[in-house]
Amino acid sequence: MAKKKKGRRGLRALLFALLGLALAVFINFIPTFRLKTPSMRELPGKHAVVHYEREEDAARDVFALAEAQGGDLKEQLGIEGDKAVNIYLYDRQSTLQTKKYGFAAALLGLDWYIGDNVGDNALLVSPGGEYAVHGYEDVRQAALHEMVHAYNYHINPRMPYWIDNGVAGWLSGQTPNMYWERMRLPSLKDTRVFGLLSPVRFARFDGYAFSYMYIKYLADTYGWDAVRTLLHTGDYPAAFGVGEEAIYENWANYMAQSYGVTGN
Ligand SMILES: [Zn+2]
Image 1: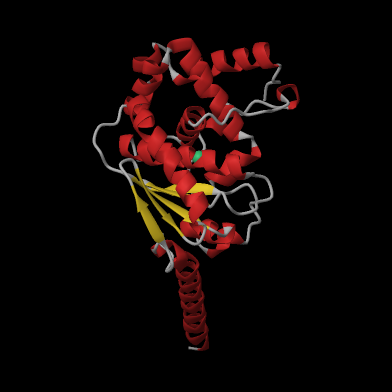
Image 2: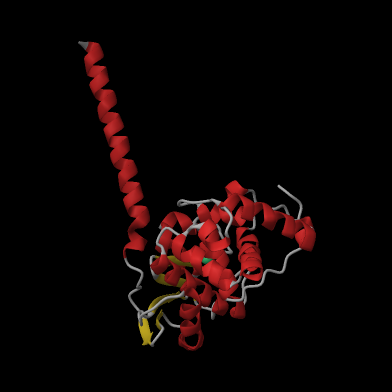
């Protein structure tokens, strides 16, 4: 009898713990329910609708860039139609960081984390703010990077993170400036990173720089049309005539020979 009671008490404690956990998760994600913040105004255009808080000059600057480049990006990605990308500009980095991963993200101290996409919406800090590792131009250019993510989402919502970011970096001209000879090449497994923690894992193996070089290699070797085929089909042999493993090996050799990158 006593044993049974104890068992029931244990069950109740477990139930409370689970409820508490569910509540904590729910509270964490509250900021993600709405991308817009209360004070936001907007600049509507053909390729982008820029939503901004107080920094209007910076917003106009991002808007001008998005309007000037949006058509070209769409053409390169093979996207038809006139839908404008919503770009949300946040004056504070902590606000931006909570919009996809909730309050927890702002607590992780990811000073490099200044932009993201949620589906086909682009999120970015305002270039007008001050950030630890990014200047005005960097941040402004990142608007194009995030727009590419928004377009890629249209092409394939489950596009691999590696490809998605490589193309975003390449098309927005974010040429990495690295000491390649001191760097280790990500493994094939690294390049297949996926899931909620992708941005953190990706940054650890310099995924942004390496994925850019991967797309650069593919574009230089096979031509941009082939890369576009990969984006739309996810089919390596259809795009390049060989499979993903072979492409990875060839790229690894290219990185070693041309840039002195050590293997993994
Ligand atoms: Zn990205």
